[in-house]
Length: 158
Length: 158
DNA sequence: TCGTCCTCATTCTTGCGCTTATGGTCGACA
DNA sequence: TGTCGACCATAAGCGCAAGAATGAGGACGA
Image (cartoon, rainbow over all chains, first blue to last red; front, side, top):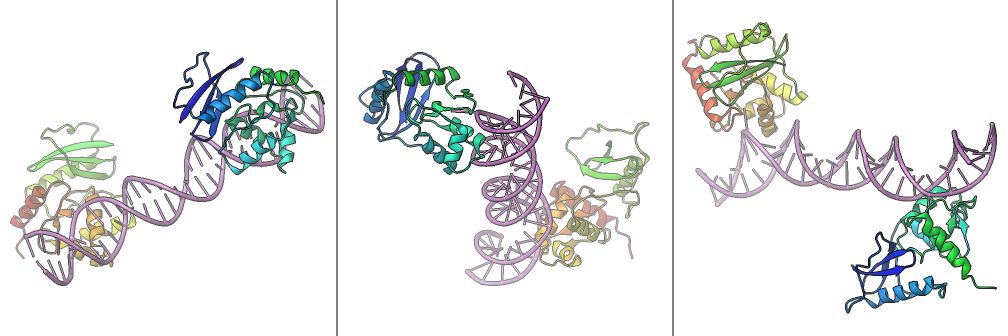
């Protein structure tokens, strides 16, 4: 597996993938970059890091590079539903449950959410509790909070 | 479990049992007696060792003290069949298989035979191959051979 | 005498199914 | 606010059952 680290304002992001697709984008501990770009780094990983950089600058609201996620049927449905939430907006776990026609599977949605390996791209951070609380985030609640505020500050006027 | 060692001409025999019945009589390695008679030794174990001594002297052909064996239904049938073979005589594995009305279970008889824990009392040593070979014995083939010759030399004239 | 195949209860090994515990929830109620 | 019960997919823990391997044999052919 090829790896490439991107240094974001809120920590190192490790990008993992094959020659053709990105399979994992995760915040990792520490503040040192271990995997830098070299002659063997697949172009897709470089593209990903560039788009992430644009995202953190507030310039990019939508991503477009090849990625794939693997999981159970249920998880895929949840993750696909997540991508329908627009930039800077939020939805509740129940909204997702309803969207995939399994209204009572709110907790299962939470679990599937936590299994997502494509941070930021699949916007887990836009899912909050029905009461407005953040409730949880694999990368840490403070990052979830930061990401939401970041998106709101760069929201396009309509 | 109470234990008592008996020193036979062909090695130490370990007698194991409760206060009332003997449950195991096995040849063990080494030539030193570890468990000797003391005030706590159940009478049944002492009786057993006495009868074994008589057997090894050629004086006893039939045993009579309380013992019990545990095993599957099949094993019990095999072991019961074994006890019908008279002193100094032999039978084949097939004979036993036939006796328990399971003629083709010759190998299974061999396996059950090997699981017997009451050496000498249940005369595994009297079972030999159809071709006359000894084929096997948990305590070692040389002991099987010795026991058979021993019994033949003390066989009662009829 | 040696090798091959047949046969049987047991034990060991796997794998599947069921049960239980666990979460990034929600809603009602106090 | 805090507590509590309900609801859902996973993961992990168990139990049981089917399959493979084993062994103290026997019959047969080379």
